[in-house]
Image (spheres, rainbow, N blue to C red):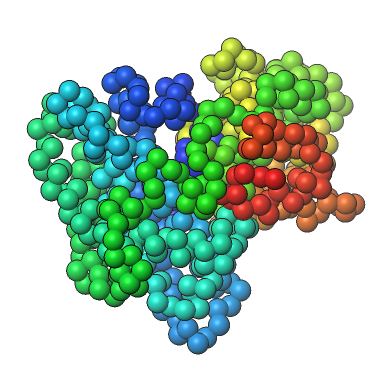
Length: 532
């Protein structure tokens, strides 16, 4: 799962994946069926979760707009002057992040579009919340989509660049053309105006449904007004220019068709598969348990779930990274009796003892949580940064995904003990929705791994270079696999292959794959989720 990055936040985003954010049972149930089939309580809970996601997307889009302003000269460059490699990297990474946020927001709009079929008198909560999410997503898409289009459409070299497939950035072929077809359409103005008018008529129903005072709703209403004003301004000033080609191609069609087809998610936009499997990971419990037998504390995991919006705005197939700790018993067995670890622990402040005893004394509350169980009654084995923050998780959350790769740092047990000690200091800190790798107060998933293994005067660590995404230095999880591939077979490689469970969407399962398949995986298109 880039607020200027980047959130630079989906689609599991959507975490939702969010890094791969932990989805609640209610949320999973809602995603596995039509949201309007839920009872009122579950429906409102899902709507509030999606509203939080919409707010995250909006923050990310606004940060991207700020980044675009700072590099405006690149966009306005004469089209007869070829872009440099650095300029192409900036333009593509920014477009990829924008594309992700736009798509993630559209998924929310689709989910609630059928509010128009829900009677407002007999089902006021569903009708009211459905409208809020639908029109909130629409105004966000239009304000930011038209702003971006105003700067990019009509620039031949730029349009060609943005329209070409770029799997390393998660961009499919003709993504920019499809964006224009959806965001720049003659019917968008009527849809925007009709929604704005209906919002005023619906205010008494919003009061009746208890929505006006709900968390984030005041923000959403203010955001609707602001985004509507921005979109209307662009439609008034540049509408004729923006819509001229669209009008020539599409002179008919409903407002609904201005964006994606109803009840379809991102894959449909690419001509792929209809969303149908959220909440049912391709990797089975048996596969995950079997994999545990080959894993060691300190291993690095990369994970992907197809139907979440995870780390939206960060390019590449792999959206999430985790640090494997093993159970407390495994950690003791792996590190406590190592001679180098014992010698190092003897130099640390406090009472003498083993490495795990030092962890328990230094972080008593964290050790108690680590020694407990997750929400599924499973032992804690993983440390990862998810939307809730840097969290201890278990097999069901960290490994029951659709694709899972495991790499082992070629470091001593002492080095891994140092990295795990660092990681414990970060546990409990908030998720870094700004992807700011220069701050330790909040951390994104890859940041936890990167900082835990960062080289220091007393630690060789892992040399993992940051990359620029929309002008910000950060580390998509995809870069970990790229590094593994680049160094594969070399004497000085930093990572060894442990395992790759490769999801098969068409078959509804995952298969064990080899190192060569894992090496190639980071090149897969981000939204090409129906793998061969």
